[in-house]
Image 1 (cartoon, rainbow, N blue to C red):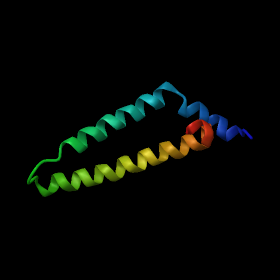
Image 2: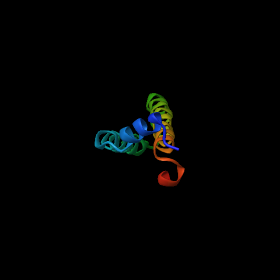
Image 3: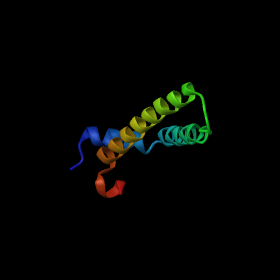
Image 4: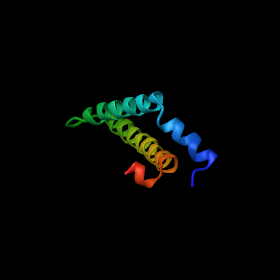
Length: 76
């Protein structure tokens, strides 16, 4: 059953701007992960940990939006 809300979310998650934004977050996440180094300063470790939490939330929200907007079958 398709509701107005799920149709609106489907339109959002299938938009090229949404896809490009998620791709940019993936690239940023990769850059943060690649910045780890041996004997790094504490501030860099803390910044990396915070960034990882933020990216985890972003990717979880993306997943939830896509499951709600597309349905579980189309998402998988």
